Amino acid sequence: MKLHCCPARTALTTINKNGFPSAQALPNTKPSGEEFMSKLLRRRWTLLSPDTNIHQITVSSKQGQKGGGLFSNFSFLNNNQPHLGNMMLYENQGLYFYIVRDDLLHPFVNGNKARKLDGLLPLIEDHGVTDVVTCGGCQSAHAAAVAVSCAERGLKSHLLLRGEQPQILTGYNLISTIYGNITYVPRTFYAHREEMLQTHASMVAGHTGSVVYCSDIIDSSLASQTFECSKFVQRDAPRGTENHSRKVAIVNEGAKDAVALLGMFRLVDYLSRDHLLGKKRAFNFVVDSGTGTTAVGLGLAAMYLGLPWKITAVMLADTMDTYRQQERRLIAEFKRQFRFLLDSHKLNGGNDGIVHWVDRCHPRKFGNVLEGEIEACQQVAQQTGIPLDPVYTLAAWEMATRITCAHEDDSNVVILHTGGTLGMFGLAQRYKSYFGMLNTAIKS
Image 1 (cartoon, rainbow, N blue to C red):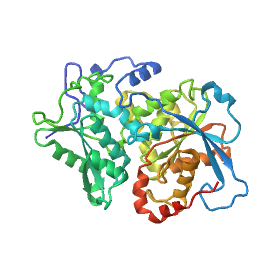
Image 2: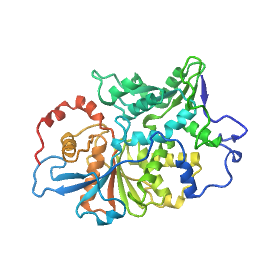
Image 3: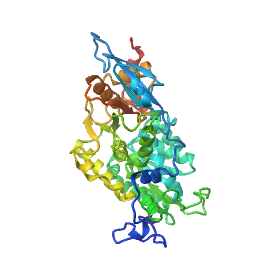
Image 4: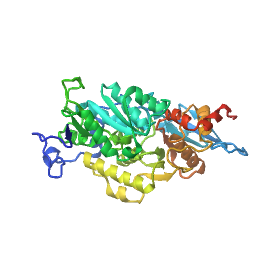
């Protein structure tokens, strides 16, 4: 088994002592902003189109309404064909926010999982990868997305899931089991993720195969000047046969690598078109944040395009210091990999960086569900037809409702729906008493 950590030395590329492509490998002149974005987007993608739906949610207050529910004082109405572009100037009065329906992108691979894999999978294919190793929780939407996406492309996925196999396979765990190769890992071993992934990838590769990290694939693609369309392997070349050595790619938990930001650049470029949100109007994007990668990608793309967009990230899994550290790491890695010189004044002008990190309205240990939150998801579903889950997307919906009703600024609020609603099936096993209360219908 060989570990491929950097591109091979060829006539087109040389590697300096720091392991990065030398000046001989890259053009001396850096592209302008528009040229860079054009080059960034002119490439193969996983999604056939960046298109997504934008809905408008009207929020109505129920004066005098008494009740202990999360949204007992509110009702919601969904307009799935709102006025966008210049027509937003003539929008109806009242309280409302928008929601980007990325949950509709794919039955199983949707939300930010689809966007993270949008730019990554074509690079993996072009690099001649035969197998993909990744990890996640038992109900990981990321692991399921990798399994489905790999199966659709003739790649084999190997999923390391934390903990023990559940008695009943359901939700994302069921999807991962059907589409991928599952290994349940004890929590003590899972705590050392990097070592765990490397060990399993080496086992999959065998003595004749090789292992490569996603960051190395990007470096190799850039160094050989084939970023737009890699020439590493014929697209129709057979994979995984006995006559071909295995090439195993390691994808980190949650795809929290800089390459995962590519899909957010494509999404922001699409949303900022004149007939949609445009480039001049101020928006406050609210997104639930597990790893924080999606929020950083939104912020980085918006800043690069000069959009007056604020990114409000609801922290779910860690402390503010950790999220800010993740933000700095992703930006530094993106700058290194794409030779992208960010405006340091814009980046360091405030202590909050490019993302406004905020606590959840009702903080708790990550993964826990509080009483009344299942009913809140039910209320939103019945009134708008939009599915939410209490761990992730409900946090963004609640924050967007709070900001909208508080009139905190003049920006229109936009939720990026990150998908993940199949996780409700797993939660139904853990919180049987909460889900048992759903038999009582909501009375408007």
